[in-house]
Amino acid sequence: MGLLEETKNFTFKDFSIFKGEIKGFNFRIIILHIEHFRQMYLTANKFLKEGLRPIYIKIGEDIGKRFMELVIDKKKADKNTAFRFILRSLERGGWGATLGNINIDEDNKKIYIEIQNSPEAYEEGIASCFGIQGILKGMASVLFDSEVEINETECIAKGDKMCKFLIGPKENVPLYDEETMKALNKIMETIKTKAGAIAALISTTEGRVLFSTFPHEIDVNIGSLIASTVALSANSVGDAFNIGKTFSTIDGERGKLILMPVKIPNKKSGFLIITQIGPNSSTQLAGLALKSGATEILNFFNK
Image 1 (cartoon, rainbow, N blue to C red):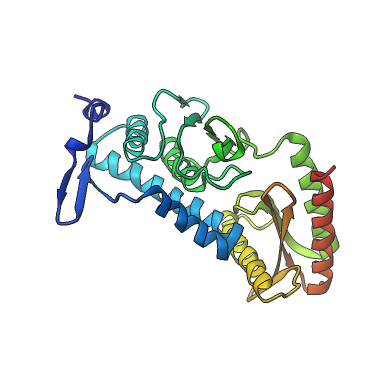
Image 2 (cartoon, rainbow, N blue to C red):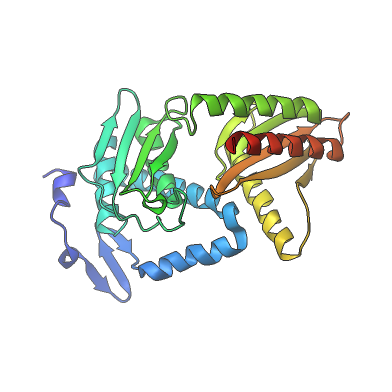
């Protein structure tokens, strides 16, 4: 009997409970009331706001990779079977119905997935399944043995009927259309020149890098994730203490980073601009350049 067939008819009668441990699918399971689960999100968002999103995605990504490694190692399953097995396990664990709504194109390294009843589709107005995005991204990176991007194209939280995800190489899964990507790239190049910057970067507030001129030896994805958390958390602190700070700075041995989050009104999302300034520039000059770039981004999305 194959791995998928083994779990096809699993029900809670197949789970065992002993001294506070629930086991099913050979894993320990923790059951949490949906309202308590959402309250953790709401409480964290209250203090960290958008700065929490990249953390959820990164946690999910590491979990997804670990799931794949465990199933491949313990069950001796091929990667495609392991991927589908984990989706079935997540479905049985209350993370939403997925089976029958999956299309895996291994030749082109692309995956299309629909999920009904996602527990994360709670933040009204945006695609808010950040943990699930991370899990799927981590699983797909192991499946294809390469870095991938994920885009939640539809979400129940936005008023859609279900949550839909497209996963694949960054060039095949752009977060925005061609016109938008060209406009953002042009703005980034202008910022870099005006700020007298050694390097510049534009990412989403979830820490997803769109454009970067940082050296290749630097992991810009991790850097952007950390920078998003720092910048957006700093904004939350500024709100709490009524500090009108438009940008944050980080001093380091290799230079000074200037960070500025850009909030897009009525979209509950935005961008993060980062520059590393050179010896002939200044924090004030870079700050003014970033502020000008932020205005250009706002004008583009509000036109």
